[in-house]
Length: 272
Ligand code: KIV
Image (cartoon, rainbow, N blue to C red; front, side, top):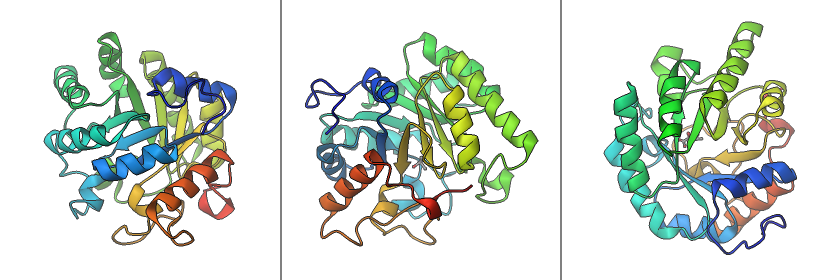
């Protein structure tokens, strides 16, 4: 359990995540879709629990996250909320749920009323107005930059983002614009470690990485990758923690320990 949190048994808030960043202690994040797994990860010390639209692929068996609806995320958010005592609960805004400021606000409110304490959305600087409107209305936002799986059909696949100078500069600009607009956290996916480290150093808010190397403020993985049960190919940046542990609680505790001690991600689990 964190040495930096005064009363670790109480429910954590965004301020606690900021405190962890300020203390240089990695934030541990993981996805969850139901109450039982949520309770196990909560007890193991996971601090940020994400009801990700990855549920479309790992729970529903869809090819992409595109078919996931706001109703789906609300249903799973309500379930996960019942399993949590301590972790901050974050809900994903699915594809097509934030096409205008009004629609984004209405859907974010639904997710907050389902039990989320923060919403996450795949955004660029062009969505700064959405982020600003949410911030004004007291809805905490985690802006997801780098690889944005909801854009898979436009991108033509899942690839490391920001590889060339222009792409890297655009991502740095997006990060700055979104934080200036009021984003409370950033989540950065599938980006080279040096670029993620630069963005993290320049950021005024905590940055959680997935496939973004070790020099970020925290790590997130899809639960089913941690348990080695995802359908299809496991991404190179994920690790099966169940393989060396007898049970699911042990595997999640090992993940928490590996993130806290910076043993995860290791050299082969990042893009340099
Ligand atoms: O939907 C999800 O699970 C996510 C993670 C990959 C961070 O966005």
